Amino acid sequence: MDFSSLVASTGNAAWSIAFFLIALSLIVAIHEYGHYIVGRWTGIHAEVFSLGFGPVIYSRVDKRGTRWQIAAIPLGGYVKFLGDKDAASAPDSEALREMTAEERRHTMTGAPLWARAATVAAGPVFNFILAIAVYAVMAAMTGVVEEKPVVGQLRPYPFDGPSLQVGDEILAINGKPTPDFAAYATVSDQTPPAASVTYHLLRDGAEIDVQGPHPLPPLVGGVALRSPAFEAGIKPGDVVLSIDGTKVDRFNDMIPLISGKNGAAVDVKLWRDGTVMDFALTPKLQDLPKNDLSFETRYVIGLSNGLLFEPKLRALHGLEPLTAALNQAWYGVKMTGVSLYSMVAGQISSCNLSGAIGMAKIAGDAATSGFETFMMMIAGLSLGIGLLNLFPIPMLDGGHLVFYAFEAVTGKAPSEGFLRVVMAGGMIIVLSFMLFALSNDILCG
Image (tube, rainbow, N blue to C red; front, side, top):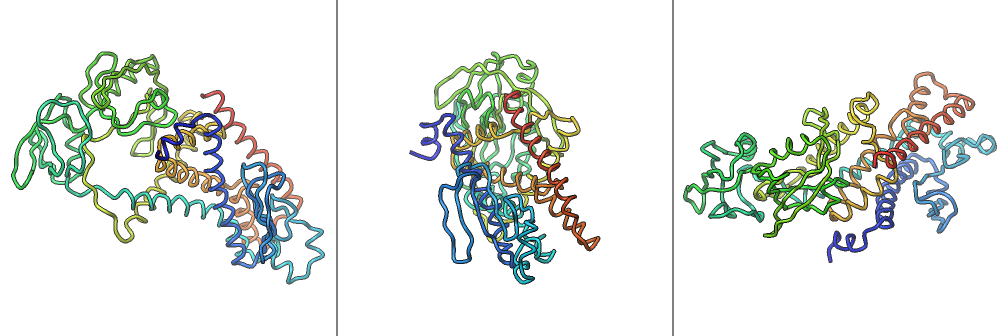
């Protein structure tokens, strides 16, 4: 039994929560370890490293005097440094006054500015490192498409007569040359709807012509989590035959048939391994990112297109997995920033923001979809948490960095009274944000 089958066989609300907590615990552990290890490197002593809050379930003290503990409420974590009053890193003024100068050097308050800034910044940085590491491993495992459009593996498809074969190199489609995969993608997108097209191939050293389905057929390549299609049980590899009785020859032909119903239910007939199946789906209004980082709002059922075949892949070498991971992470950071700005500006729905309930559902669905999907979800969540922690809000790492920047410019730290006030304000902002996201889970569905 594989990972997704195991999850599916036990899938329910409890398992969604369990996988959410697994993902959150990993991300929090990496984040807090960043604070801890950089603090240790810079001479700041950590008294407590805690996963979770509340009553302590398990703890041990290492040779450096740091207490490592697991607490009962697994919704975060913290590192309490020497001289901190609490988990929020508020300075303990009384304790600090009783310390020697040497002891104060090992506190967050008494450490040099550069050491404090590095320690605080390390949490989000380690979140980025986790995301990049996952992306790099997945890229190395998957490989990259060969430059030439060569058939690596055929997908089951209801087409009568001879068609493509494994190893075929596609030279042209309907007479339009496809010298590389980029050209193949362009020509495929420009090929009008048709039940069959002519492929000019290089097969076993000879050039031949064969008929085959449209190069961008109505074949399901992916199913979005928490979408109508996902909830109905549609799977990657399914082939859509018709929408409300209208025959579909090309994937993009489905878009107007679905969005044109303005949210009314659609009847979807699809083919799966020789069996024809019928589904009634109610599309959801969704803000979809475009290549230029803008958004398009339309009704969708949650399907993304798949190619007629799996392209031949080549292994990544040297720094290629890292380069691919950095590009993917940078795109994720840009999309997160643009999405948050667009929500604040009212350009897209605030329902795009999920709280704990929504994230638990996503984690459960991702685990059901397989180990790779689950790990990619962890990478995306880690990236988002790292970015959000850099926001200049008191209580968050970004807020502390703003205070350090003020100290670097003025030569003195903000007063304790000022810090108490802004920290309280920061807590209100963070809690309000969390409650707003939680309300979205309930109201937006």
